[in-house]
Length: 262
Ligand code: KIV
Image (cartoon, rainbow, N blue to C red; front, side, top):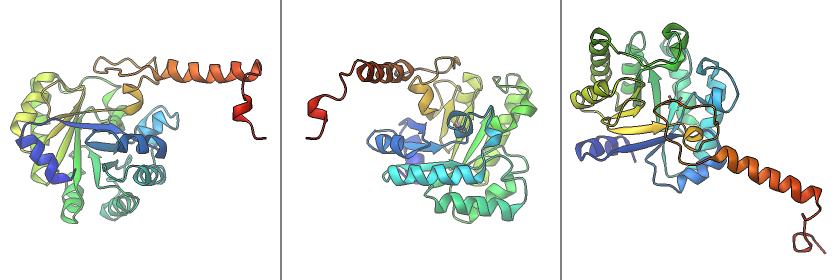
């Protein structure tokens, strides 16, 4: 996969799949799957580090996780999130962050929003780095949005989102994540753009879908947003396996002679 394959998939009406990946062991597994693209999302601040929002992701964290993923998923296209405020402190700081993520092994960066970030996005694209946009629910702006809610529900907000999407395409984004917006709007943006859209909670008509790996694996039984489909019950699987180990240790059936050195 490369940025041209993203465009080709849209032209040929083939859907794009993307999942988050934050560490080396899951990168090695995902490298052996058919999934098109890995996202080292800033959601790692929540999923891997236990913070309550993505604003706690730092460039140090992102760089370390990107490097771990890149060492494990050598055949996958890797997108790395630019962390909170990394595009708001001027072009030099933004370019330093991009440099660190690309040197760590990313193939592209993802940036939330299109307001004060737009000139920086254009600059990054001009510097030869592919940029994935991100509109709709933007978790880095959660304090401004007043919580995790479906975005752009009225006509004015929907029109503004379409304009933002067009602006991001015009400055050279190669694809666009649409998060938590009505299905009709997801479809409308996808039809109006030449670049592919990748939805999460944006309905079935976007050009691709992205999910957080841990959510699709069912690691957290308490996280139940409407858009989520679980493909495994990893919470029960891991708890069951570790309890099995514990009972084998306590009843002394582990280790058996064949698991011991003479
Ligand atoms: O950080 C992340 O996991 C994301 C996805 C939800 C698209 O941005």
